[in-house]
Amino acid sequence: MVSHSSSLTPHLMCKTKSSTAASTPRSRTKSSTSNLFMSTSYPTTAAAGFSTSTTSSSASASTPKSRASLVAVRDSLPEAAVFYHYSEISAATNHFRSNALSSSSWRCVLRGRDATVYRSRFISGDPADIPHRFSRLAKGNHSSLLRLIGASLAGDEHLYLAYEFFPGASLADCLRNSRNASFTPLSIWISRIQIAADIADGLEYIHHQSNTIHNRIKSSGIIITDPGHRAKICHFGAADLAGEVRSREPDLKRSSSRRRKIEGSRGYMAPEVIASGEVSPRSDVYAFGVVLLEIISGEEPIKYRFDEQSKESERISLIETATAAAEAGRVRQWVDRRLRDSFPVEAAEELIAVALHCVDPEPDKRPDMTWVAAKISKLFLDSKAWMDKLSLPTEISLSIAPR
Image 1: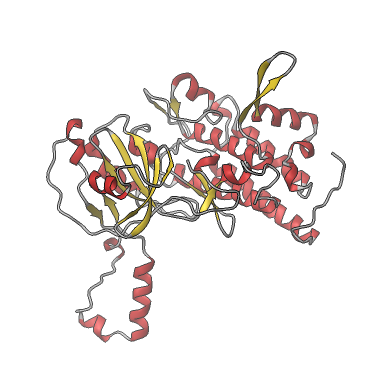
Image 2 (image 1 turned 90 degrees about the vertical axis):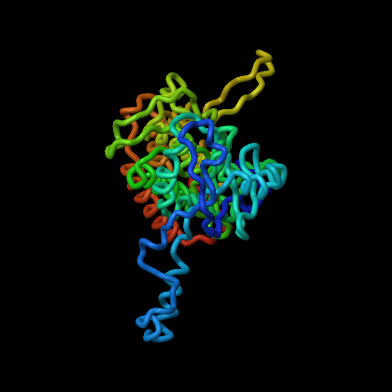
């Protein structure tokens, strides 16, 4: 999704300051989608019971300290989500010619605020239903998610989503530096397992609190903050709003959706998605398992190596190499060498086992994200205890056994 330098660099996501504008009634037919989203605000702050008015007697009677406290609370609330007119999105991105971060995302300024716009094709459903779904998703608030703050549907059937801006670099770029393969800012084990815990918590929230499916989990769609090395998941709500996910039942464990168009990235798509286009929370779990293996090894999900003898390219799967290492008891040799052998081997073995459980070929055998998040949280605490007991400076590595 984003191209970054070797160090953590500012990322693309966004926030917006909203002023409301009247929208003209439109037809519910798909042919009228170009003007479906006039500029309107979703009133998230009104429900909280805070008002900006200063004319009431109670406000005038309050002390300066209490007034300051109310202002601080009000300012900390999420700003109203916005339905942008397509022309505003187009103008902010210079008609999608400026500050392209990828083929489908642009960094821009919307109403005076730094922002990122992400484009996704609108696949199916009634465009007139999007405002309701958007208002529900815009309420999502989790520390591991980049917050969805705006949307617009264009006449060319593309959906444009605005997200809060957050500085950082993609997890993929942090793990694989194109300029210097031996360098990674994630050279400490505790940073990696913290990132794994953040992603697991965010995905559990998506499944069980937002009652939807992400369907875009991959290392290039996860931002690592600078400083702090915490993870934030991009593209929250995109699959739902684009029509890739049908309305979800309260219990997501067994529900699934069949779509006529498969969305996904090579190496992250579960077997059932490739075979039939069936997406579910379990296919998210599969993609997360692949990302978890990337975090541990630093390697790509799939890569190709040219064989000099056969003169053919050999396909190397991260899942297959991890499985072979676990079965042969060679986890230490498989873990990213840039960690310099300074990691708790037992925790690494358990984390690989969790990842391989997540990528089971059979969807029903994959765990629920609640179990996954709890397991990784425990491994994080175990790793922290190991690090505290070791009491080594971060620049010193420990090698207990030869590779």
